[in-house]
Structure formats: structure tokens, C-alpha cells
Image: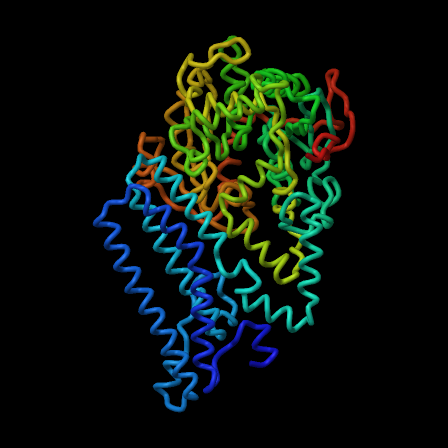
Length: 590
């Protein structure tokens, strides 16, 4: 065997090498199947109906035998020199359709091709076994999730010894790619996470979060940003945005061309945004009530004071929407209705079923968090570290957000390219233990927020139905964090006028979809009817090309009041500019 073939994992047998290839294939199959064999045994030990197990076993043996025979046939044809059209056809391997094996080397290298095919067969069989486990829905879903995590981690593309593309790269660069990969690995070990982008390419306030504005209020929980008008006139009622506290606000202001904040300002709205403090050791005792009373409600009060209006338009994104809705319900219990309108973007209100995140939450898991991070923790409450949250969310899509970078960074030695969205995604935020534990128990676990009077927040019984403002509810069709049916369920909680809009794509890409890009699409319902069944709504909805932002802009303008001259300077009425946007808080690292 040549040095080239040795480095590349053996690209194909010669006339004299067929037996050696078969031995290599057997070794590869044995190594790949060892881990899968343990997984098969563990699944078999669970409650799988005997007839289902027998059928799976029979089909697996048949398909594995066919795969082996086909691989031997291909190699025999190649060993014979493929001198006839029939032999040439037999020697040509069927292309692999999985994108992890898209590089030509996976098809040209027969051993790698066979290994990938065997892996895909094992993976499919394990997933079918998981589907047959006799258990309640949540247990079966957890088994599926665990199996998928194992399957994704076990891909031969993730290992240098089985990845012909990485091997060929090492050969072509005389080992330099491996050296770079090791350097990238060591740098990530120091960072504590797998790099998804070139983090040195971005700086908050320099080339992300650049829309011009000022901090006009701050307390220990948040800074309030007011943005400089881009129009000569603005609507009388301002717009307050409450982003999620589990991420930093500048997902709404990545670049000028995809900034929802800049878009709102350009539409003539005097725009204010909450920038959350990144909690540190001094913040470990913060509670859900603190986030509602001293942050969301305070932001509403200050925005009204600065604008000099009785009511304001409000927007909440993800957990920010849950916080905003809770704050407005507390104010409603006090006889106040400060919101002229409410926009909720991919927000959970009714936590009946929430997709994959439900797998992590049960009584035992919540109690564990309460005993380690909450008020009951020995030694006092603690912080949920931002990197733990980021890692959890990454492993919801491990091939895209973990293994893709393991292969590219470490096996191929390619530094990840600069990408603003992934830079934001890696800019983690901590959460105070008591706040986080309350949120887990009373929303995800016990689903009490939707029940009028069930929860007491800031000393008030909460009833979201008491909020009188019209509500614009948005969900993303491929959202794995807030499934669109979960977002749709909010239509059944609020009692006033409601509008539901469904956008294409996922949790972030669906929301951050500027009209100028002319990408994706959105669905609008026929009339104002919002049936309880989300699929019934979709059946009568109409798909429209492009961004949902234009629909929202028209809706919001109807609640923003008449136009008046734009303010000449930020703040006012006792609230003066403190520092330029984006402010200090957003620059705090976890």
C-alpha cells in the first residue's frame, strides 16, 4: 500500500489487495459496531415488544448482509480492473446522501464508504428501536433524544481515523492541518467551549450593536437604551422592546441591514430597548419578582415618563415576552393598563407542550436545580452559568452546532469563519438561581402562568386575560425552542384583540428576516378567527412571500398615535443620557 493510501485510509484495492481490503473492512465494521452493539443491548433490555424486536433483528441482518455483499462485490469488480462496462458499473459505489459524507472522498474511498453505510444502517436501526420502546410519551421521547445524541456523536466523520477527507487534508498539508487543529483545540479548551465563529472579528459597539443611541436609565438589573431617530417625525407613542434575559439584546441589532431595532426606528417609532445586566456573584439572590418589578415594570414606567405618554407600545422576544406579559398582568391587577399594544415574538405563555425542552424538565430535575442553585441550596443560591445554557442549546442541534465544528476546527484545521449571529450565540449570559428555579417550576413544570389567579408575582394575583391591549403573536414554523403550536396557544389565553402570524424558518432566522432580503415567507390567517387547533388555523391561512416585518409594521402603526417632531436629544423629564449605546451592561462577559 502506498503512503498516500495509508494516509487517506486506503482508497481502493488493487488486484492483489482484495483480501487485505476485506480484512480492513472487517476491522472497521468491528470497531464501529462495538459502541453500537452496547447501545443495541441497552435498548433491547428495555420494554420492546418481542414481535417488533424480532422484525427489527431480521431486517437488520438482511440489510447488513446485503451491505457487506455489495461492498465485497464492488471491491472484486475493482480488483478485476473493471475491464467491462458491467464491471465498471459494479465498481462504482452508490453516492452517500448524508451531508456529513458529502465530500467526494467518502465515495472514492471504498472502506470509508462502507463504514459510512454501516454507520447509517446502525443509526437507523437504533432510532427504530427507540420508537418501539414501551413507555409513556415523555420517557420514549427521552430515549429517542439519548439515542440521537449517541448516533450523532458516533458518526465516523467525527474521528480522524475514519474520516478520509481529514486524512487527505493532513497529507496534502504535510500535517499542518493537524497542527492547526490542535492549536484550535487548545484555544477552545481555554475558552471552555467549541468555537463556532472567529470571535476576534467582532466587538460589541464596533461592528455589532451599532445603531446609534444612548443609555437613558440604569439600575442594577438593566440599562434602558433610547435610539436616535432616523426620521424627522416620530409617532407619539414610543415602542419598548424587552429581549430575552438568557441572551444579550443585540440579536435585535446585529448589523444595520438585519436590525429589527433599526427597522423600528426607521419606521418612525421612538424606540427603547432593555439591555439586561449579565448577573455575577453579587446577583445570586435575584428572583423572578425582581425581574418583573425592578426591571420590566420599571422600564415601562421610565419609557412612559420620558415620552410623556399614558400608554406605550411593547414588544417581548422569547423569555422577554414571558417577562413582559407577566409585568403587564401585574400592572393590570393594580388597575393600570400602560400598554397600547403588545407584540410577542416566539414567546411561551401556555407551557402545555414545548417540544424538545420538555425532555429536560420533571419534578426530580427541578428539585435538583432548587437544591443546588435556588434558595434551598446548601451555602446559599448560585448562578446558572451561561456556558451551561449555551452548551445545552447547542446539543439540541448537535450536528449543526457541535460536531460540524469539531470536524472543521480540529480534524481539518479550519478556523471557523466570522459570523455575527454565531458570535452573539456564543456571548453567553448567566442567570440567578432563584429566578431560574422559579421559572422552571411555575412555567415549564407546573404551567401556572396561563391560569388566572394561580400565581402571585410582586404581591399581585396574575391574570394575563386582564391585559386589555391588542396582541400581535408571532411564531416560527421550524422553531425547536418555541414550537409554533406552543406560540399559537397564546391566542387562547389573551382576551382582547389578537393577530397571529406564522413565519418560515427557526427561532432566530424566522424572527430576524428583514424585508430587503426578500427571503422566506409568512402565513396570515383568513379573517380574525383563531380556533383552538393550530392546524385548523393553518389550513385556512394564506402564505405570503417575504418578511412578516411589513405586516407587523402596518399593525403597529395603527397603535402608535399621530406623528410629531422627533426629539432633538435622548431622554428627558429627569432622565438624561448616561453613556452612548450599547452601554456597559451588554459588554459584560459571563
